[in-house]
Length: 468
Image 1 (cartoon, rainbow, N blue to C red):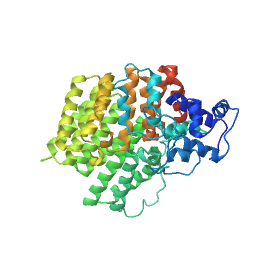
Image 2: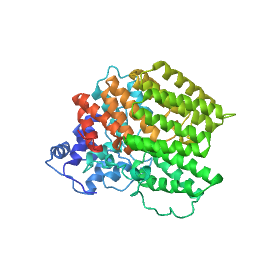
Image 3: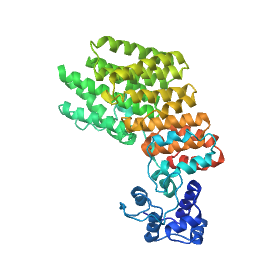
Image 4: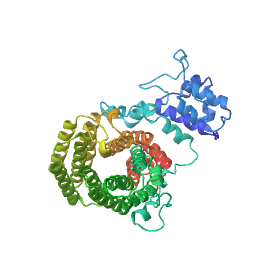
């Protein structure tokens, strides 16, 4: 790593700002004088040698991820190491470490009388961790916000100029196609949208070819896989705010699902149809579609299974989301109540049929819905009841944190909103850096935050490439 002049000074300044430590305390921890810390902060002195960065890392008890960012080898400390020179602790240890996301939600339990600076000092080290150190030491902003959807266009439009036709003329292998569809779902669930943009377009072309080349039961299976792959394509394109291509992908997902003859595949594709209708503001049609597909699935299933309950509940949640966005509180409450009952019948959190449906996901939707209805306090109260360890996918965890940030911002708690966004970025970088809708949340935070928070919000905006 290239050590740039002045950067350790920025880091020391942040340590003082967020932990309340003085230059003397930082110097004692690192074995340096207060004057040296002051000179480094003012830019009058530079830190050039790895041995000095080692003294910083050891004195501040930085964990391995932070040591690596500083260009140092990881070091697992033993339980017998002395901490007598460490900076005195406040409410959290100084060691930079990623927190359990639930700690964010405890910020508001008793902080009504605290100002933003107190909240940030108390939680900075525990909640931002390596992401903040990255922001301090990064040379350039991330390029994750420049994700491109263009490779999807020709394959979804069935036009020339799509992905290379490698393997398109070979006999389709259902086993390999099944594994490939599982891979793209794993990429989506992990929030790796840049990987998805590379992997998925050629897979869509292979699946389209397989549906034409096969017949009988293998063809039905190919249609099911094609529906699932186009479904994840639509969801990924919605994340990246391309409504036109998302509509195409959702339509092709439903066409393939109907051709497969599998009720669960049709129901799963219905969740994507509803999502794309919502993205275009077609809320009444989205509500009607969700209700109709849920009723159809309930009718088509002689006895519900865990998979069918997961799909049924996911369709209901999409309908409730559409109702909330339309301001139809009673309809949203009814659909959400039915989804809660379905989750209770299912009894476990999981990701059957790639729905992420379960009791916890129902709570996550309740957070999203109450924010949409303008009930920020209720949203945070609901969020406090969520056990983040039970959220089945990284994408859902990061989305939950972004929704929580929206709730805090709506409530006027800017420091908490900033911390939630930082935690989301650390959980799934591209969920924050790659999504235009999240960029807007960051812009809103920068615009409305008091000076004590605005500087950090501007730093986050720069790091993830927000255009202002």
